[in-house]
Structure formats: C-alpha cells, structure tokens
Image 1: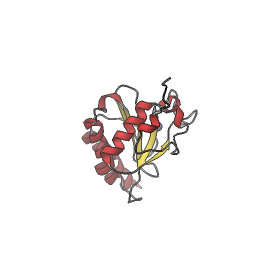
Image 2: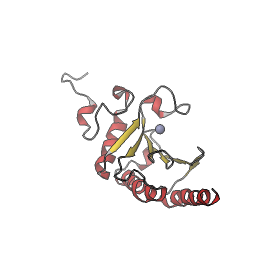
Image 3: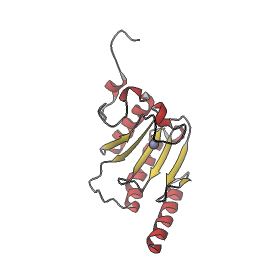
Image 4: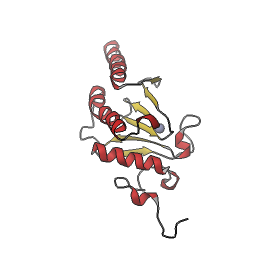
Length: 162
Ligand SMILES: [Zn+2]
C-alpha cells in the first residue's frame, strides 16, 4: 500500500472506468496499459464491449481474470466490409502489437462477423492468434497475409454460394 492514494486508472489516458469493463477494479493493469498504448498508436476511438466477466466466455477465459477485453474501433463507417476491416483495422492492430513490443506476449482474436467487427485482446504472457468465422468456428493464424487470405477466401466462397 502506497502512502499516497494512487491507482492504475490515473495512468490510463484514453479509457474511462465507466466503459464496459465489467468491473474496472478487477482489470489487470497490464491489459489497461496495453490497450491505452494501442489506442494511442492507432489514434482511433475504441469501444470496449466487455472486460472482466464471471460467465459467458470459454472455459478458463482470460476475461474471468480481468486479463482480456473485447473491443472495436468506433468507425466512421458503420457498414465496414470484411475486406475493409482486414486492410484497415486489423492491419493497424497487427502493426501496433509489433511496434509496441507486445506481439509475443498477447492473445489476439479477430472477429470479422461481429455486428461491429472487432478484437479480443488478452495479456496471457505468450503469443496466441485466432479468428472466428461466420459460423462460429475458430481458426488459428500466425501472419497477417495468411489471416487475410484465409478470411477472404472463405468470405468470397460464402458470398458466391448464398
Ligand atoms: Zn474476449
């Protein structure tokens, strides 16, 4: 306990405790600092969908430890297409993780089929990457080019068969 009252939220510039964190006091400081750095790097407003939770996620989810949040960029274009999402939002997040030296230490999930396409980020301490397709199936990926190809090929296949 410090003599002077201090909490992590005083160091967070771009997010308020009032966002949808679940419980802002249960969020890991490492996640908040990482999210704040990503927000600074990308220079686009971010909407937090959820953070700390006690249910609603996969078993052993980092949400239950306050080490994860789901989020999307507040886009000026609400009808952002999947290809646009990949070439803009996903690319800048991948670049941010590289440049901020977070790449090897976080879990990043790509969700192109959310109502507002977005991300899961967690601070698990090692690298994990996945994306969820339109049927709710999870797929691993490691590089942006591979991810883009996988999503776009499945996306165009779905669009031509329906
Ligand atoms: Zn999540």
